[in-house]
Image 1 (cartoon, protein in one colour):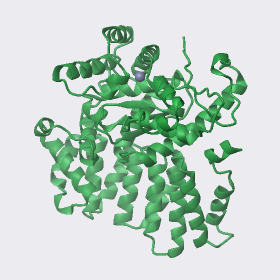
Image 2 (cartoon, protein in one colour; image 1 turned 135 degrees about the vertical axis):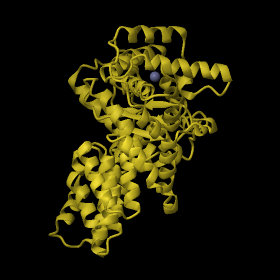
Image 3 (cartoon, helix red, strand yellow; image 1 turned 120 degrees about the horizontal axis):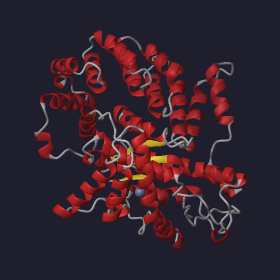
Image 4 (cartoon, protein in one colour; image 1 turned 180 degrees about the vertical axis):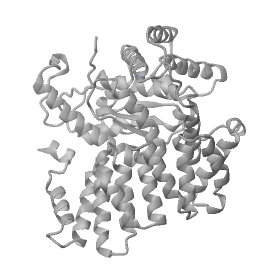
Length: 471
Ligand SMILES: [Zn+2]
């Protein structure tokens, strides 16, 4: 049932089977070998995304989409580590990159009318990954390394550059070949819909949301003749496709639980406040209710550090009405912390009790501790629990920042060390190495715990994918 498709990629020195002589993907050797290459490509792709494209690195927004992603991926039976990112791009688009890296454009979040619709696109992209559509069979020839391939794949998938003009030309016919292969084939789309709808229902979302969302986008682009969303260019909506998706969804049990619309609306307000590319329409803005206006005003004030615009009175009313909703409670605690009110810490404790494994609450709580008590407590809080989380980049960055503000100059070594860990998380090993070297020049105590950790990291064969290819 699964159709593996082959990207005719090229890596110097790699003795891969020719496309005409496709190996059996069930063979254990090849699976290991393939997964190694896939991971290297995933690291290079992650590095490319995180360093070359505008991203929304808001802890609350990221946690929101990662939670949806987690609900879906745990229904797939696939044990790979998926990574979810938000690209700050107004285009209505999403993509599945190598090694389970999934990108959601901020424009897509804005165009969805419910969490179920957003989840339906995430489920579709997850299915492209579980069905190995971006498969990894390379045939050996010339001089193209993994970084160049990752650069090209990112340019095509993120869609912000015209790859045919740039690097694809540089890579010759092969670049165009990749571009061709990445345009999802009808068979793959059908399969991603099929499995995606299944995951969606199992995760407790409305399985009809996928056909609803694609159908709505398609209708809107015909009606208003606006530019066809990228998502529809790569995912053409045909009557057959919609009918098949509806048919599939109708065979699945109906969802009992309606997903929370308050938090989804607040997520969109966060994107509106924090994105440089994606804004709510003037019409949508004019229809915000009092609570939404209150949330938006405070989100903007916090992000721009405008203390005079903070308004806890409207937030108090909101959190009294929504006693167990994360986003209203969290922003109230943040505003109280910014206003130096000690009750913020009690509010953070309440939040932690309600949502014990939420890294965005942990991070905001640490910021409040640094603001209201002391930096050491904030550092300790993150250091004690960072290991529990899948995505550690923001937490390591926060630690780097907290240590950078430290009075003791020798603690700057910790700042570099955590900065290095944040870079390792996104596959940026060159930067990580540079920061570790800097940490070493400050920490000359060979017996210290930190020095040991720095040396251990530096002695690990740094995942320099380009270098290994030159062997
Ligand atoms: Zn697709």
